[in-house]
Image 1 (cartoon, rainbow over the protein chains, first blue to last red):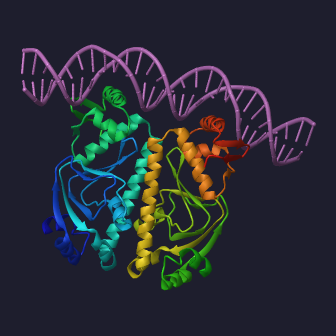
Image 2: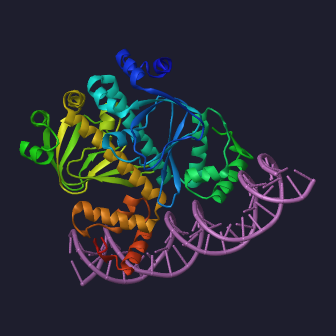
Length: 210
Length: 210
DNA sequence: GATTATGTGTAACTTTGGTTACAAAGGTTC
DNA sequence: GAACCTTTGTAACCAAAGTTACACATAATC
């Protein structure tokens, strides 16, 4: 584990902290689609993402979903911090968008390290800032953009985090992420295809205009 | 200033920290409508809200606004933290919803106190958590609710933070906060009035169904 | 290879919200 | 009180997105 740690967090944390993380953290590997956290869960450990992509979702009382943002390597989930510090239930759902490797750190260490390590404080604050910025971007998207723009943005974002311009997904899945209906997505996808921005195939979409 | 400090933050911070804040902080009083921070501003001091209400707005590239949330007594602006820590420009606009009293603390102290005071660390983390929760609520509202529900929620929220069920505002102003047009708001307000939930008057709305 | 399940395309229609246009009421200024 | 500005009410129309319904293609299962 220390190898992954040094590789992805070595430039962030001092040697001593890396050693501590190595001692108390546990390594975890999850497959694509794995639900790391659900709404209502209590959290007892904080994930440091080493590899892969995690998608963070929100759900309303009808069970309708909305994709909030993606977490990538080097990120941690500020919503988890939210839970840990406040001892509250999770307000979001976290699902592995791709196979992912994580290091889980017990919550108790948080406060300890906050006092001890300057780099940890910075990391936590940075994480909060990143998450706030991402939430702002999400708000901009749903408040100010029309569905066709949101759709194209979503396809590009998805291509980005997966480092692949061919997305294996269905219209239904996209509709759920954007909180709209499958018919609307099919309609708009066809429009984007006619505009030459994407190429449609069964279970996959080739994003041309990245 | 130490009086206001003890009154509103005494139960949060230890005596020593209160003294430090009293020494380096500056007291500030602003009238209703005063813009405390604009998009693009660089921030060099952190506000602790002692009295009054601050509204936090987001703007898109066309100058269209959207109300994100209200800050109340005892709150601080996590977006400011965002700026301070990251040395970035402000991504939001902050306007006094009512006359407000604030204590401004120089950014440099942040990191210092984070190390020194357990209560300060908690305060900062708590603030981030509150802001994240509020952003989530905002997302829920615009993603999952229809305009008439959003409108009623907005009226209730506004009545709440102002502790007054009679709102002095115009349809135009509400439309800006909710990022829609005046005509739509007039239409929906009239509907709410017919449903007996509000009572309309020129420049004021009486929220009956709180 | 017949049956079933999943995914996609499309038409027709409805609802919600945005736009334009204009009238009228209530204030303000001179 | 005449001229002006701000605010509100409302009609008529338009556009975006949600809904229902169904055909058809592809893949999976037996």
